[in-house]
Image (cartoon, helix red, strand yellow):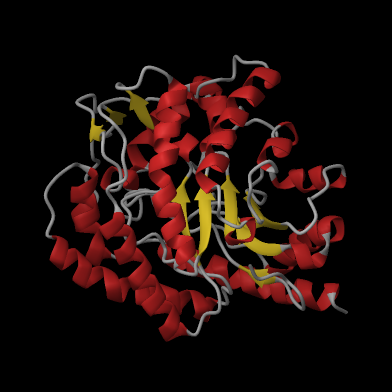
Length: 395
């Protein structure tokens, strides 16, 4: 895993706005409809090559494939795991939580638009919400899909001359939270069935020479969405059980090949019910990873860089704070990005910091958080800010 040995390196959280050429296939997959796999593959390979080149041009040192082969950050596992299916219950929002209870008028409008903004006109009709559930034994069936994603990505990387890159995957706990259990006798049995299945995907990525990024948004986000009535001690035990399952799935993979990403949910909303980072950071650091990617640039969490005044980053680990955010179309000034990076560097050491983003820019095929042109402007501002910070930190 590369470190910022002589300058601040840049990366991001993974998902990027998908091009129109592949959106129709991803939309069909999301709703369980048949798609032309050969046509999708023909469009996907050049799309991945293009997005890798564009990241390099924007100044991203450690890119992803944009998650172009996936319908979404967590529901892509419908293609990879047996036992999961689309539920007949399609209407309504499954999670409620304090934020939705406090701002019902806001969400009544927001839910009508968050799945359609920035989509091409041909796909902009508001889709019904789809739920997924576990109705049978969970096993891995995604070898063909992960081999396709790895092959496309490695070919793109070779063409762009990139040294190191990462592929995102979903954590067992986040998959469990996303797909209601209708089959297993207990949550623990279901969780470890997922962990056993996902081992194959995790190891395939690392064996291919790529970094593995495990996305686990539901470790922070579930507190507001589902469990805010628990004490922090109770929520800590709930979260720690999911982290133990993740470490079980990561067993045998060198930690320095693993990045662990958390955020408080990607939706652009008030977030007044978010659990504070200081209450869960000790749990995050228990993950057997070499780097921790943590949301840190939006107005609800930017102040939490101060958590690292009292929390020690373990020896040899890397921190990837979000220093630009997906939650607004305002493009951060490079000097602001540099200031944010410098704050972290003073606390955990400049060589232990990479400049990152809060979350992905398009977590699902139809969830686009900023306009594509703004996405690239933000990544360029990230690179410019990292260069300014490097001048200060290596002065």
